Length: 224
Length: 339
Image 1 (cartoon, each protein chain N blue to C red):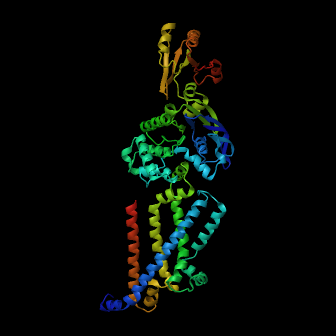
Image 2: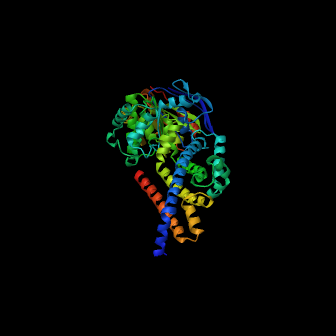
Image 3: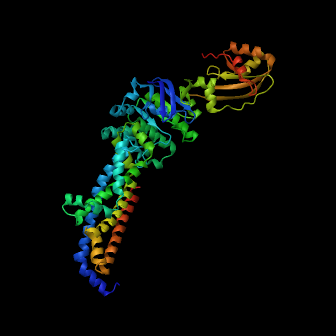
């Protein structure tokens, strides 16, 4: 398989097809991660504030947020991309290409991140929160100065996990019109019976996951 | 300083506080004791508004705690420091950052924070641990840091929730003497919740015993330990006394006036009678040493001994072995008069 033919083939396609697809995937995942992390963090704060064991419990608000989070999370990323295509068309102007994929991917990743961050905030020792209350810290100070501070290692793990999950989701998005490595692997590789492109794409994805996990693990070790 | 009147509090259907009245004057070290679930920690949390209460009043410096919310409640908590059994230090922050945390929340300037933290570290006696993480500290050192953090806002009141319960006796003692020192140097009112009798004895001036959400007994610690009311006996359990069936068993209470006098031998010489000593104990309290001695005298000397006790202002009571009815005990017991 790795004969002369393979390398000739690879060189032929790499510059024109694979390399742009790598950058396209990186852009999609990065944009998704940045927007979804900000929104997810905000949503996690609301869930932490208003949750039943939260800092200022509000049952109704929490139930609404909880319902929205669960609803979005019940769609697999691929279905979500298809399902919200009318909205995507309205917002982005098109339903194909990497820009069109960022919207549904972000929408899917936001509640995912929010739930994970909410979970790690819940893990923070209740006594620390009580102690912070006892010297007069406000709810926001408790979140930022105590909960966030104490859960930084798990926030790093969450970011690593989400990045890898949505790297995978972005390749699936390739099946329904998004660009990137997923689209290349499917369209130029699988459907064109071109194993060189298919397996090169797979290999590059494998390397990308290794790099993300490597950075995540390194940061975690550095910080703990 | 802290006035509590008819305080009630429920968690769901179970009432944990059923009308508690306590008055804590400024500058005092006050102990709240009781068995697990008696409501003592809940009561403590009502003082700084971490818990709310349904009925009754709780006034801190004349302000009803329940009426405060939002910023006003936070301003009140600023005046009330609190320490906990598990120290509650942020694991990812250094000692310095932990102590500075309340000051940062209240937006003090960095130079003020720096001075204050160093001053507090000096006071708690571990200035060399300034950049250590809590996991590098021993239990006692962690509690010292927690105390420094609680004092960072210059509070008027310090609440201690089982602050020494997770520590070994020697370390616990060093923490209680630190609390004593803080009380004396800074004049801070301290409220201590504990189940360790040694802590009560060594720091508290007055104590209140809670039983099932009610105040069973309150008063000066020496008086309560000397008189041993039923509530205290329920709490510490009754010691199995070796009592003799013949003769009369008498417990002599050694109050602080007579604990340093040789009462027993003097009585033996003056009355020229013999008796047996069945047991005794001495405990040192915040200011005094108190204790009790149980003796057994022959029945015919009872009146002589009684007169001697009355003449010399010695507090005493007859101790019955468990088989005899307790009603009898009440008849024989004399009212005790404190000097």
